[in-house]
Image (cartoon, rainbow, N blue to C red; front, side):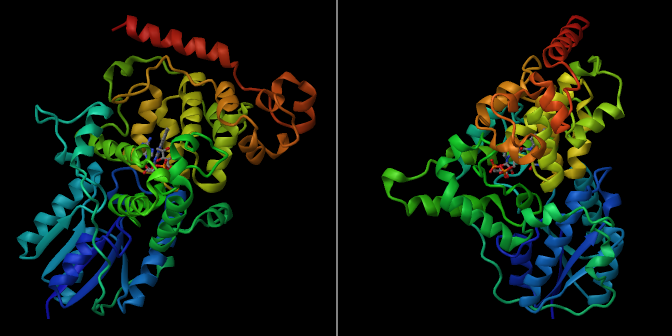
Length: 473
Ligand code: FAD
């Protein structure tokens, strides 16, 4: 009887799971294992919203495996020690997993791999998360890309007809004692603030497939127009499913390509704008791999001398709670608090407001997003914050300060998004809804705050600080 351990991490699915497929193809029995080891995440242990998602995603994986007659063995502790103990107990000769790209995970996995190999265990790892791994796309000089457009051109050329692996049809588990019940991982919050998350999402492989079907059938054709409108369901909302590996980019690509091929040529959706966004995800992983310090350190070191304002918990708290007095910023922050997700355009606007109008360091925002987003992802979050702050690779120029009023007028002209998340302003007429401070009586009657900063004045101050940084170089 050949036995293998399949170590699930952020690949919580059965289909297109190369580690699982390879283990099942070559072994009689598999031990499906998940180890919760937040101390091994290099200071980026999953935040509260991510833990909520992880709990439900593991429950879903457990159920899927159970249908195949295999238990998901859950453990807490040091990954290497748990693996060594289980290898001894079940007599496994091999360990299989899919690769991760965060610096702490890379270091941990390298250590685990060499320790197990020294003990005579075969180790096999695979790519399950990306179209191309970070080292597979190189410039002509064999270095990393630092600008998105040429990176995407190089990646796009390599994407042929998308293929993916089906879920294994036969699996045989191995009984081992000592597994924990899911609740023992302590992922769910003590105080039940998660009703909004539960009503917004269905974590797990099945939920990911359902979301993809909805997007493929209804929205992908209009993606280029609708993706900037926060009141519309114009984007895929697949980000948390992708982060936890409940679905892969290959599966998404294949599903959309099949759907397009089956559509009459005159109405065939243009998939390129959407694929390009998946390309940004790949670019974020490429950057994190090649510049592993960027979750906390400016990619562009010129910004090390930037005059941020003094850290202010009071300012940050008003931003976090959606009480800045700037409607589009507050609507976004409340959407985030309620659902664990925020529309991409609004993410850019709330981030610009924090970094530029309030001049609080981008890391404060990145940390808040880390705790509150269900799709919190070290690669994408670091790229997003450094992009908006102006200090990232291929970032928005610093002098681009989003004006939340102009943005709201353009992308939420009717105010549907604002009314949804700011119920105290739901009856406010346009154009006041976009600038409620123009009617003090409205502020008084609604209890909505006056803006915490003057938008034009704080923008000018940010630009002065930026010019001084450049002068001091
Ligand atoms: P769609 O528009 O349907 O795009 C499909 C997929 O492409 C997404 O699911 C995502 O995986 C990827 N993608 C789309 N836009 C980007 C982008 N700009 N950068 C990288 N990948 C992208 N995304 C995260 O997944 N996790 C984060 O922690 C995160 N933090 C962000 C922080 C800031 C300040 C900003 C500006 C953006 C951040 N993003 C993050 C990127 C983006 O906002 C989300 O990926 C997107 O809103 C998810 O919604 P969707 O799945 O409907 O996206």
